[in-house]
Figure 1 (cartoon, helix red, strand yellow):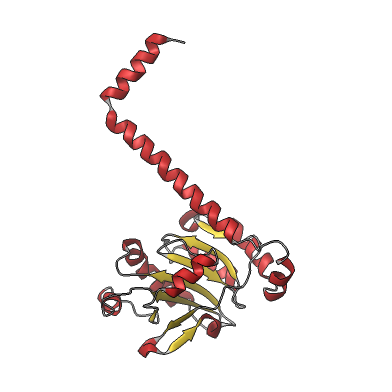
Figure 2 (cartoon, rainbow, N blue to C red):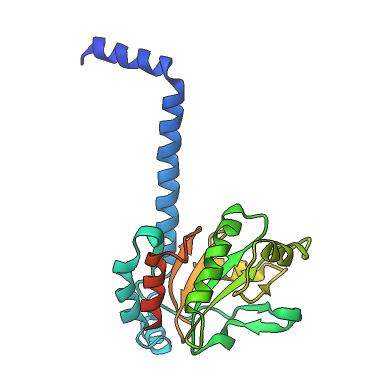
Length: 228
């Protein structure tokens, strides 16, 4: 061992403690991101013995998910494509005026299901992009369903959307936040924001844990392929 070089290294560490801390934080952050991605990919795989049932309930979804995989790059590089898509559990929330809404009500359309809250800074930052996405691609074959999960001060979500000039998104909410817990139980939600790309049969093609620039060319190409 080169004791002289080792002593110099220890001396540099003492002189640059900030660099050592930064390095440890970067390593820790990398481990956390890798763990989240691994958990999402593992949780979205059907359990043994349920592959046939998933395929029957989600015709063509496996092939469509495979087509999405090469498109998960750039602004949507963190999008985790499901190896074998399966139906999402029943999800309930409310629409305008508090009318009951279920995810199954959108059957026949591809859906980008987004969960957000006003206290979630990344959620607030990506909301204009989601609004632009709905304006660009929303229609009879695709829609963005952004569900607010604030559990207090329930006047804030609508006020925030009005403040930033949202004009294309419908207003959906679940003040109980049960929808977030249900998605976590299905392995498709780990925090906020969570965004799930759902096919016309209600099957999850993939999930984004964290924010994305949903009006970017990368995102538009991903959504277009999911619709096709």
